[in-house]
Amino acid sequence: MDKKDCFNLGYIAKRVGNHGELGFVLDVDNGSKYQKLESVFIELNNSLVPFFIKKIQIKGKNATVSLEGIDTITRAEELIKKSLYLPLSALPPLKGKKFYIHELTGFTASDKTFGKIGTITEVLDFPHQTILQIRHGENDILIPAKEEFIISINRNTKSIELNAPEGLIDIYISKKEENESEKETDEE
Image (cartoon, rainbow, N blue to C red; front, side):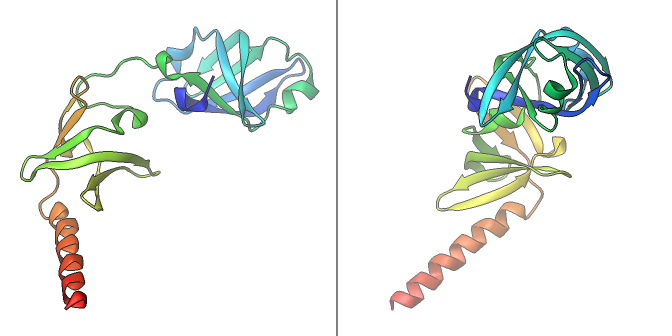
C-alpha cells in the first residue's frame, strides 16, 4: 500500500499493560467511528505494514489496541511513536461544505466576485487554520478554508466556489501587476 493512497489515522503513543497492548492517539473528529476497525497500517522503515487488530477499545480520541503478532513488551515498544494509516477508501464520504484535506487538490476554485481564480495546488493544514493554495497564472493565492468563505463544493465537477474576504484576492492580483510593471520598466 502506498502512502499516497492512505490517510494518517494517528500514531502509537505508548505501551499499555504487559502483554503487548498499545495506546493509539487517533487524529480524527469522532474516534467511535473506528470501533470496528479490523486492521491498520503502521509505518515502519518508510513502508506501510499491515497489522490485524485482535481487540480495540476507544474512548474519545484514544484507543487501547491489541495487534496480532504483538504480544510482548519488547515488540510493543518497537512500535511506539510510529504513524498509523488507513486506505482513503475507509474514509466515510462527506457532503456539503465539509471536506478532507487531501481531496481538494486539483479542484478548480472560483470566487463570487472574481469568477474563476485557478486550481488548488495544495491544501496547507496549519494548527489554527487550513489554507487553500490556488495557482493563479504564475502566482499563488492563499485563502483560508473557513466554512464561512466556502459557498459550495462540487465533487462531481471537482470545483469549489468561494466568497473570499473583501480585498484578499486583490492583494495577490495587485502584486502580480506590480511585478509585471517592474519587469516592463527593467526592460526599457
